[in-house]
Amino acid sequence: MNLTNRHLLLGVTGGIAAYKAAELARLLVKAGAEVQVVMTQAATRFVAPLTFEALTGNSVCTDLFDSAHEAAMGHIELARWADLVVVAPATADFMARLAAGRADDLLTTLCVATKAPVAVAPAMNQQMWANAATQESIKTLEGFHMLIWGPAAGEQACGDVGPGRLFEAAQLFQLVCEHFATGLFAGVRALITAGPTHEALDPVRFIGNRSSGRMGFAMAQALVEEGAEVTLVAGPVSMKTPRGVTRIDIESAMQMHSEVMQRVTTCDLFVATAAVADYRPQQSAAEKIKKSGEKLTIELIRNPDILANVASLENSPYTVGFAAETERLEEYAQRKRIDKRIDIIAANLVGAAEGGFESTQNALTVFWEGGQQQLPLTDKLRLARQFITLMSEHFYARTGT
Ligand code: C5P
Image (tube, rainbow, N blue to C red; front, top):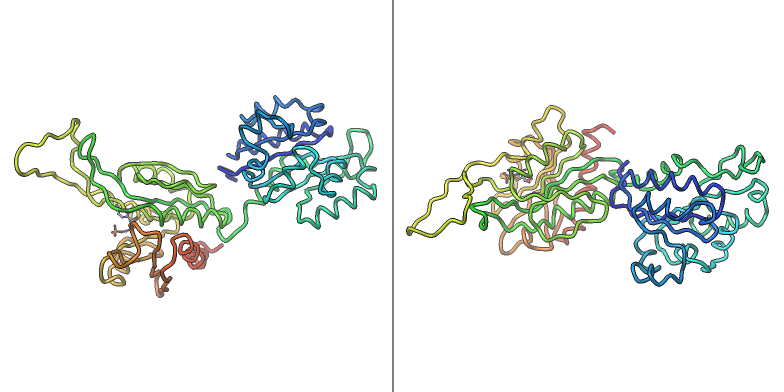
């Protein structure tokens, strides 16, 4: 599971099982997550903050009134930053405070202040777990839609046997992964191209096009929202990377081709939204070209068709193409779908009156073998969400899952 760009707030409270949280932090970081650890004062008596700092690369927050931390990232900011809060281990005292809505230290304050889901992994002596007040806290937290992960039963640090053991780090890690692995494209590895390409004429000039990258970035966001692991190979655009997306920046068609081909064998879905230049200058001059005669001739050569190359691979992923046309939309789009041997193509008219290249809105007509559907003009993110919902039926029909 890839947790790249996921923001995990790991709360650690004062129980002997706190050492297991260090292993959990390591697993999360290894999976690509950004991990911010918040410890209660009692937790720091069991494990030194330095352990978590070394594992996560982030300084550990312990105090609501620490001005240095508040200046760097205030507690409200931290609460907003989190995609998921996991408190492991969670003591009986911590859960009682949370159930009462207290905000009397940094960790409870964050749990109260965040909109992100909160998962609590209890760990305590079996008698404390059985205690009526603890059971009441658990019920209350469940009523608040908090996730209760555990406890496991077995031998305890104090010698007792029974329920109250913290889940193992691997089990907690699995639960975090499952938490993110929901949605129409859960666990699907998607590779997307977006934006224009720049084909260098010399060190300062290039041949480019008007693609803004918006449609591709919207596709990336829509797919990541639906649980896909998304890698985006982007040409030169000024777009913010959607949360959870791994981005690779390139300039030219040849670079895009090479980055795609290196990754395509491990992906299930390839979405080509990029406006790849069909031709590139045969030679890019080493120095700036000086003006001389009245005419200048530049020899262009064909670029590889990335989408067609991917679609013709022996074990090709499901392939999605885009076709921007100025006329005869259906005819040209269908021809592209068949010629490039792609599974589905989304076509749109580009021109002054339509949405398209530089616009924030777009309309698509989607063609597949034996069918088509119109998606009317709307903003590109909404359109991308509609398109991937439609596409999911065909994707799963072909991949058979
Ligand atoms: O043939 P045309 O460029 O109109 O085809 C558009 C589709 O093919 C788009 O999905 C685009 O991303 C893809 N394409 C590509 N590599 C090229 C040219 C187009 O992947 N060199």
